[in-house]
Structures are given as structure tokens and as C-alpha cells.
Amino acid sequence: MKAKCYAKVNIFLKITGTRDSYHELASRFCRVHNLYDLMFFEKTNSRKTFTIIGDFTCDVNSNTVYKIYKLIKNLPGVETFFNEHVIRVEKNIPEFAGLGGGSSNAATFLLMANKYCNLNLTVEEMSKIGEKVGADVPFFIYEYDSANVTGIGEIVEKYDEEPLDLEVFTPKIKCDTKEIFTKFREKYYNIPTKNEVSELLQKKSIDILNEYSLEYLNDLYKPAVDVNNELIKYSNKGYFFSGSGSSFFKLK
Image (tube, rainbow, N blue to C red; front, side, top):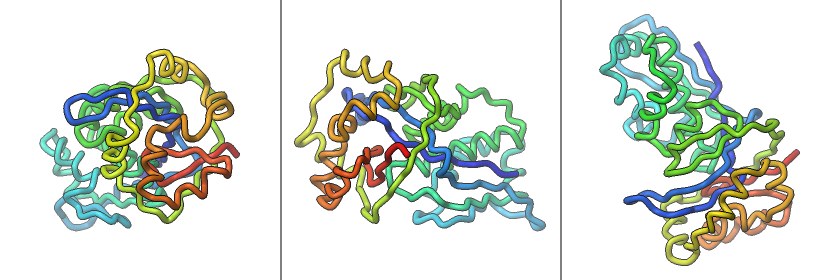
């Protein structure tokens, strides 16, 4: 039993307001077909507790896959299944890089658990579970190649377009999302107009990348550079910025 956990990039990312302690956004998420982790459910000979194996930098309690497991473990058959199977993840997506690796792992785990544990959850039900773990998880639950994502990440609408052939580059710079959002609120908070957002949501991704600048498309780029000055060296190489970084991408 195995599945791919694809990375994503944000073609654009505009902060449109706040809701309680969350930021609302408008974004185009695109799946990166040539960058993915692999997730396996492997039968074990001896009965065990929940076990996940992989090159993770966090402990099990902080792992997004484990957080999903805790939300579904009381559903019929789930705990028994994962006492008899270990989860193994071959990591290829850099962590904390704006590519959604942890969210993709969480979503893929839930999709696989739904299938192999015969849970019969709808996509909408899985999305509701996923958003409790991370704002990006619903996008990966829907398995769209391209989607407009709004709200705090829970509103995912398929966008029909040809998949982009993307090259992703992640410098060895650790971007702290919390610190970048703090800098954004302090210095760069400027809500776009409804017309600006509507125009971006309607345009094809390839047209967006050809018509707009890196600085305009991602509201978190400038605060990220303020926090990590070395990011600036990549701004003149035709790259665009994904999420809160540190990954860049461009059309091949």
C-alpha cells in the first residue's frame, strides 16, 4: 500500500484579512508533479502501537500524520489496523519550506486510511478533519492539480488549467513562518482590493507568472526578506516565492 504525497506552490498569495487568530487569504495552489514524498502502509508481524517511520525533524506528537490519526483513531477498525501496520514515509519534500510537505503527508495519510480502513468518509468530511490539523491540508485532500484557496484555507475550488511544469529550488535557509507573519503585520499589512483578488483568482497561472512580479504576487516575500536577508539573491533569477518560504519556483 503506497501513495505519493505531492508538494505544492503558491502561484500567488494575498492576505485578505483576519479571522480570530488566523489570517484569511486568497491563493492559487498548484500541485508539483515532480516533487513528492512516498507513504507506505506496511504490515508488521508483531502487534504494535501506532508507528511512523521517516526522516522527520519533529517528535511524533507534533507530526501531522499522528495528529490526523488521533482525530480518527476511534472510528471502527482504525486503531486495530494501525496496530498491525506501520507507516513509512520517504521524505523528498524539504520541511518548513513553503511547499506543504507536512500538510501533504497528513492528507495522504487520511486518504489512505479512508480507503484501507473502509471508513467511507466523503471528501468534504475528510477536508473538515484535515483543517483541524493545518490550513493547507484541505487542498491536498481534494487532490486537485490547481485550485483557488480562500478563507483560512478551508475553501478549495478547483481551477481548470493545464498542469504547469515547474522547477523548485529550496535554499538552505530556515524561514520561521510565525516570525514572518509578525513582520508582515508590523510593516507590510495592506489588504488588496476585491478587484485585485478577483482578477488573480480568474487568471490562468501561466498568465499570472508572466504578467506580475515576485514581490507583488506573494505578500509574505518582503517580510521574509526582512527576516532572512539572504533570500534577496534569488529575486533576480526568474523565480517566484512559495508560501512563507524558503522555496522558490519557476516555469521550466
